[in-house]
Length: 220
Image (cartoon, rainbow, N blue to C red; front, side, top):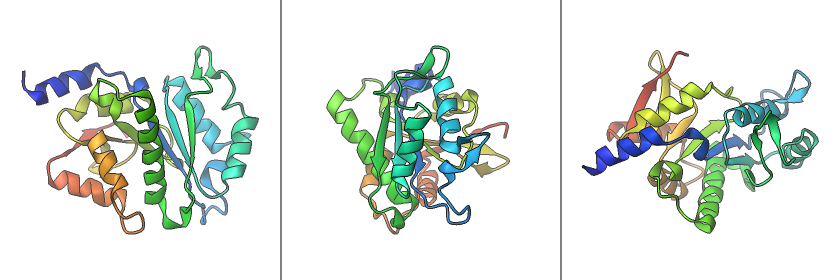
């Protein structure tokens, strides 16, 4: 079979749980008056709600990128058990080795610099444990902290729809959203771009112009 056919077959069999999630929480939250992940929602910081939803879906590898108020984030995460042996509902949760914290030491450079920090941390960890045989497991989802975690069907649709493309984004009524799914080739390209002048949306537009990005229709 052709390489693209093998890739498509491999992607269709990949479980989303084995694909890392980069959760971007490095922003200052100027309009909100505080980092968005620390805003209280029903008695818990927003980041805890996000992590609980990821846990419920069974994700095994989470890279949380911190920047502003990093110490406060860590304090809240410990307080709410994100580093306990099991976190989540029932038997679906994180163990202590599932969450990697990365600090963007220069968050003033913007969200792309946080993305770079997360990607570099992820690639470094993959090099230590060895690269997975399935190319999809060398990819990663990217979700900004302020974007509500979508249902599992959206994540799975991105994996199923990727085929030979280098990136996939959920799309509703022609508007792209998050999470985005990026293959290792794109992740490496992100590491080599200028952190102050680059933007993820511009990179995605470039990939789309090269027919290397697929838009996956979602219900919302």
